[in-house]
Image (cartoon, rainbow, N blue to C red; front, side, top):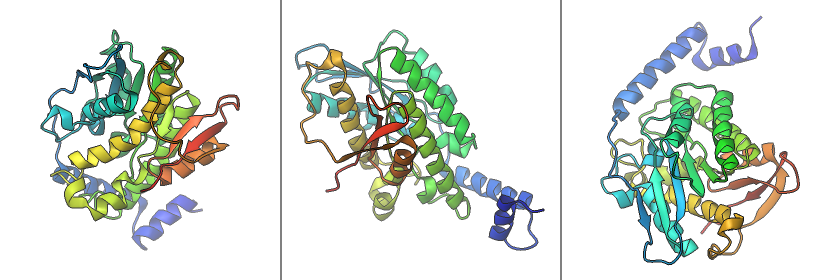
Length: 312
């Protein structure tokens, strides 16, 4: 008897082809895409600094961990990297100095996050921002494994008194060097992982922010300015677009943290919000970039608050 998945795969590649041949074709496409994109261990200048050091009060300590999107792969100045943009943005919206430390690594997978945290063991961050998942997809890490590891990392940070904001895996189905049908597979895997990440992050006490189609229509329509030279990683403007949906989430987390109530509130009205099950919230967030999902206090781990991004 032919199982449904096997039948679907066989139908996709045509009669007479085998499932092993289909996966062999995908592996070949993946190798071509990786060759076109290229790999490097190069890092931009370090963004580690205190931003807004002329402002009064003790700095908010921000730790950034994750992969190349968290590093700011391809940037040539510190201020053009996501960690620096986060520091600058938070300084403005919180009206307080922000000390940034980044341990993100190009090519990192979720399994490497604990090691990144350990390298800043003495920092004691107030809030951590995590952007990870793309390399789990490209290395075919099972989504359930990747999400479980992420949940462990978030729980570890939360238990230490740190607020956590996670930018979930973006939609990889629009990356030009990835050809069809691998592009369709990458889209399905990345969105599936994003849903599982959201559930794990919220369950562990963190706040998940969907990066969904930040590599979608906006990037496709403005590819020349949103993507970097490798057509895979974002340009400076692309990274700024990512940071623009993370800053409000970080500010909201800090607002809710009792020991930081003295800092100014994020100076905007609250976006539309709904209470729904965590699974339903994760499914919606995976399709809508900028959506925040956070555990709803007093409703248990199965319920979450969804804050939707306001569209201009």
